[in-house]
Length: 236
Ligand code: URA
Image (tube, rainbow, N blue to C red; front, side, top):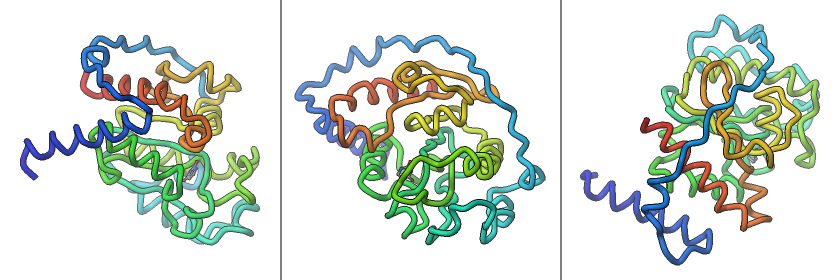
């Protein structure tokens, strides 16, 4: 694709996403003058990546995971959802755990919420293959309940090793489960979203989960503002 058609494609994606937010006008100047909020450090537990510690590639981590039976989520799962995208991505999106569609296909964020996440990614000027997408846990919790502490404790070392190898410039945590478990905080997502936190020196932007946006479309605008801060951070 030529530079010009890439730009036009990006603008089209951005306008399509803006339309889903109910916007009828685009205020370009506002986006440019938006302040990036000051980074705030957040405590995070140093998790021992255990079995994955020696992994030199994402494939090594996947091989270590194998046909995992380390926690009770293996009982109901169909496919392990490892993560997808560019192993050298600048942005890593972290969700909570696979849902029904993800469990069937073995790929994160492919259901309704995933389609909205893809729109957001496109509106930021990226394709899914340009970013990396993963979850706190790699197997579907029954009835889409939140993952339990023992499940997170078992699975999160693999995600952490993925993030350590990818070394993204920014991590976006989608929703409270991703945010609270990555940052080891009990603070509410409503309090944290929109402000950069830090994890292992990497800026982390907590924002609302796309599934929440499907039920609360008035929250799409704040999420878009969060993503604009992410884009500004990437271009800094
Ligand atoms: N919700 C998530 O948190 N992750 C997925 O992969 C799909 C839905």
